[in-house]
Image (cartoon, rainbow, N blue to C red):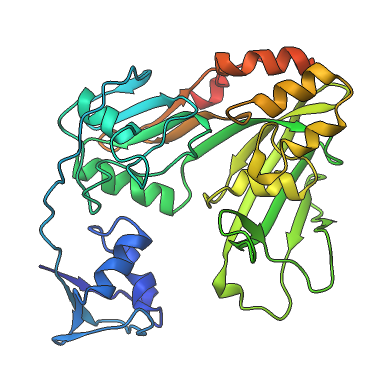
Length: 354
């Protein structure tokens, strides 16, 4: 058990939010789980997530003993970009699920890492050792895994405070109206399709509205909702810029300020430029408009979508320096580039990021 004292800057906050400032708590889901299990107490009594804290209050937090489940090792050839005693950075291929789930109990990235090394951080989720963030199954690219509790705590705080560097490349249909833009919305489950997420929209509108925010010729997409509880959803912010174009397609670079489920795919689709091959968000039906029959067939037969986690940067958990890692555009997406006549730009990390 540990004790957590409320500081002045947390006065008036909800306990589920205040707990995120506790060094031992690495995520919102962990705080939520501790509260739901009655493991957070004030003066011996359990507290609800909505409990308002005051400066000087001291909470007792019991951390359950974590016993690592028998995760089956999975012999899978991983591309390790970097590995040291604290972290592993992997170039995850498309098609590989990140952590065990229904239908993928033993053939995931976590299972492959269990085969690769024996010292992943258990953290709070015994079935997800070392996991800090995720990539969709059909997204390739950079992902970092922690090898000890110190590294997991450090990285989790960085992702929570949005101080990490995450850059993606996506091949999309059409040409965005603005070559550079900032996309903001409130994301929630789609009202009729539980596999999808969507932005909450202004009442009575069919499409999101682009408005100029007046800063450096950037644009802001605001998809806010009238008459709904915005607490139900989560704010999502994506910055993009167009790297190169062909007659029917664009290659865009995306920088995340938040990391919501399907965030990039949703924002691009709602802008009218779905990711090529993304069946869930319109990236296959849009292929019907392609001029080339061969291209239409190729996209409909794709077993992944054209989204790649290009760069990842963070402060190294045990060194006072920021580190950056780069995953080259994957070979399995080169043919779609040829068919769409898109040329890749320089793939090196800029000097000011090294």
